[in-house]
Structures are given as C-alpha cells and as structure tokens.
Image (cartoon, rainbow, N blue to C red; front, side):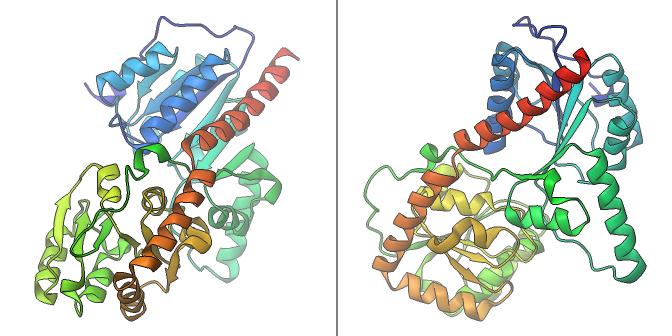
Length: 386
C-alpha cells in the first residue's frame, strides 16, 4: 500500500474529551519494534493517552504488527506518511489536520526551520508547534548577508514555534546561534533502556580485550580513523565493526590493506554487542547531536572513547576519553593505554555505568517529554475553551 493511500489506524480504546487539545506526533522514522526510539515513541504516546489526551502518531512506515498493536491498545491512533517531508506529504498532512481541532503538533527528525511546519502554525492549522531537534551537523559558515538572513529566519521561527526541544546543550546552542531566542529552547537529553545493557556479571576473562564500533558505515562516522589507529597494534585487541552503510565494502578493504583483522558483523543485537565490549569507540567526524552509541557503551560498563564532535563530550563527561576528531595518532595513544591497563578500563567503565544509570535513562527522557507536551496541550485547551 502506498504511504499516501494509508488509512488511519483507529483503536477502540479510551477516547479523549472533545473539548481538549490532542497531540499529533510527526516523525520521519520507521519503527522496527525494539530499538531505543521505538520504545521512546511507544512510551511517550502511551503516557499521553493514559492521561486522557487524544494522541496520533504519524511515521514514515507502519512498522511491525506487534508494535502497532501495542500502541493501539494504549488508545493511540497511527498513520504513515511519505518522507522526505515535501509539498505532497505536507498537503496530505494538512488535509488530516483540517479534520482536527486544537492540535498540538510535535515534530521529530525534520528540519528545525522546515517552512511547511512553520506555515501550519502561522496559519492556525495547528494550535501549538513543538520541534524536537535530534539532527547532527552544525551551521554552515555563511558570513555577511547570509548570516543576517539566517538569523532573521531564526527570529521568525522563534516567533512561530512554541517550543524547540534540543537533545543536548550542543544542539541548543546551535539553535540559538541560528537566531532563535533562548527562551524558546528546552533541553531534554536522550535516554536509553539502561537495564538492557547493564553487565550481567563480572567482566569476562578474555585473552584480548574487545574494541567495538557501532554505527553507520559512512565517512562521517570516522571508522577509517579507528582502523588507521589500530594498524600498529592489530594483535592487541579483537576489533569489531558493527553496522551497515554505503562504504562498508570500502572499509573492509581498508582494514585488509592496513592489516587490521577487524570483524565486520553487520547489524547485531546492540545490548549483547556492548556487553561484550571492553572499549567502545565513537570516532565521529561530524557534529553528533547526542551520541546514543556512547551511552549504550557506558550503560554496559565499557570504557568509552569519543571524538570532540558535537554533543559527544558532554555525554561522556569525565567518565570517558575525548580525542580530537580525525586524529588517528591521538586515538592510537589512548587505545594503547587502555588496552594495556585493565584497571584503567575498569575504572572508566564503572564511572560510565553510574553516569548512564543516573542521567540517561529512557524513563527520565519520556517523563520530561510528557511534561513538556502536556504543558502545551493544557495551553492549547485553555485557548480553545476561551
């Protein structure tokens, strides 16, 4: 079935009161059922519905049937929409919104200054607009007139969007540098189901420590930097590269040329992968909005090494090691130290585990998002009643 022909899934569960606003979650995201953001969207929508608000979620694809059924049991309506979010998909969504009243629209994985979303709010098609910014990357240098135009756009967006939610201080600063007033920006850091990653026993006794990379196999993730760092010590560790991407075959060829016996394992169960890691490396070259992989490694009690890209340093804090992005020599020095010191790995891993369990839980993330969304829902309901 084509996305633009998709019906709404209308559950038989509890109905919201007709005089209240309703939350419409729009996400350029395809659920698979058991990833961190699958759980996040399900828990967020279910929590809002349990408080008596109407909730509808629009994804890029419907996802697996058990996942849909879980949301339906919570009283959540589901639909899907064609992405990327262009004129056709915006027109379809506008048609749906016209049939609603008092909608609070919450957008995920779309541009912070998406003009069609701004138009929905400016024309009154939605009562409130909240943009959750998860996107990696930084502002391109423009200079002169270009910078003036960008800041003007930011001020306009700040007057239209009721609230921006940034997933890290880095993202919040990026939004502010684009001209959005700081009062419009709230920070809600990402979280994960930390209990899934927690070590199940004492560290395994291995002949060699295990170094893990997990992520997309694309240049921006810096896998080639890790392989370059490993080439002078190929026998010092087991090197595991998890993930897929358009440069996978090139990276495998590079590992062979460098003499690094890395195992490219594709997509694997992330919890088991990280529990088997002694060191997790996140050598990104681009500005990461947050860095879920770093937190997953921390929650498993691994020593985590990250580049100084975007939100990664603020995620690991004092419990990880930060190296300059793209610097294979600096990364090699850190890895040599960690691979030859089990006590240093254990110290960093224990501190990282405590930080993840206290700061980056999925429960905390969902709770803060529920509070933020419900504040807008109450404001929209009061305005509607008036």
